[in-house]
Length: 150
Image 1 (tube, rainbow, N blue to C red):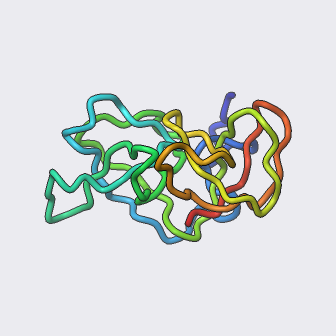
Image 2: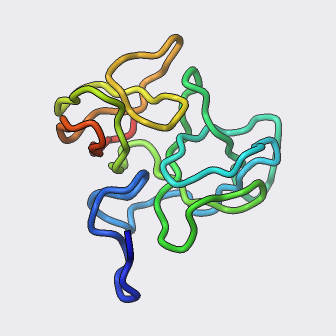
């Protein structure tokens, strides 16, 4: 997808893209953990890394399906992936973001979980925790759904 130079955000769903307002309160200076071996992309569900401390900003890494999420890395047209030590913006509780879904229909109001590919599903993985609620329905296999983060 190409973005026009005068366009601040895409006009189609992307993982972690805010649905309604791009200036919602959020943590803009979280740092990707040194313990994160692979780069994180927007739409990644993250957790605080308790093994790393930083007095200036929270340190995050990819969440396991059994971790209570700290938030979701939000979309930015400037950069698609974030390596260890880089700063990221995080959507938090009650924010509404677009998220890709796994196969199968999702109905509005459904409780959503996430998988290891940062996709949402209504099927709870083993020891999986709730990511949020579906604000919209989605039926097609490659659809995105609006998720209010829990």
